[in-house]
Image 1 (cartoon, rainbow, N blue to C red):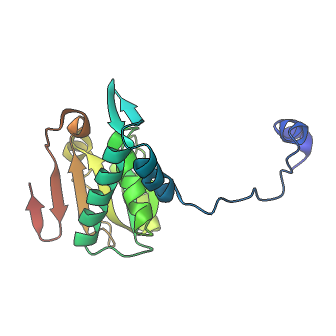
Image 2: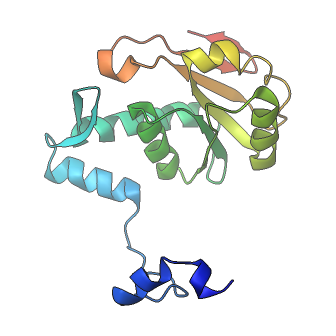
Length: 178
């Protein structure tokens, strides 16, 4: 590909960055940063969603609880979490929790059709799928039983972390737990 078809290269060059080399990688993970900020700035806002703030302490504690839920479902490092969610606090919490366990995360667009979800989840070998209640009610039922690696579906209400009122459902191969 010629550089003239990649107009961003001149921006990198003007900033003194080489497009072809890897940037210096931090020693800390995202999870390490969240944990450190929770210790150093526990009451500082980490996320704001629909006018509701979540502190670093809350984010860190929720990520720990979510990680414990994943562990209770038998995950191990390298297992894949599928996140079929828009930009919600649940996405962030689950992403951090998965990282704490050494899981791999893949985003599954809420706009995908069931056949597309089946294809992506199968290709990525998703073990746990996390979704929102509206998707659970529409696009997920046709997926169940068609992704060999899928063992658990965790369903959250869109406002669960904002309102504190849970309408979560957890589906495993053994049945549904509310």
